Structure formats: C-alpha cells, structure tokens
Image (tube, rainbow, N blue to C red; front, side, top):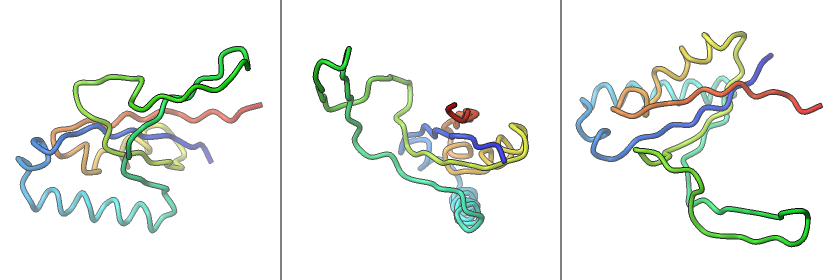
Length: 110
C-alpha cells in the first residue's frame, strides 16, 4: 500500500483560537489514526547534518527549511490514494487549528 509523509505546521495562537470541541475531535482523530497503525510524532528540535563529498560530518542545531508557521509534527500514513491520505490528514489538529498539513507521497528507494 502506498505511504505518505505528512508534515503539520501550526502555532499556539491558531490552536488556541480554535474551538475546544473542534480541537478535541482532531485529537480523537489522531488517536484513531494511531490505532490504525499510523506513525505520528510531535516535532522536536531539529539538527542539520552534512557530509559533503563524504569528507566529514558537520552538525548544526536548527532547521534548514523556513516557513510562516513552525513545524508541529509528522506522520507516516498508508492509504490507497493521495486523495485518501489528504482526507485522513484533513481532520488532524494542524489542519483544523489554523495551520496546514503537507502530504508527500513517499516513494520507495530502488
């Protein structure tokens, strides 16, 4: 079954201004996804790792990418289609609490 990586972006302000009942249902949806086997996680502090030309590893604290909202979490979803993955992501906390969720098809490496 195809896999999709989701990246949720959101901030506390958007979360707090969302009706509590909507937030509670979004968290219940996340719990149902986890019960279905979806791997989810809250984003911690990132590290940038480089090893240009295999000449030596350098590590730097902080995100490489930048966005209008902070990264809040990730999930790996199995779904038959991208439309199904979008439907599953559309009820998550970031999607309903004034954030955004990206859905990326995860292609198998050869």
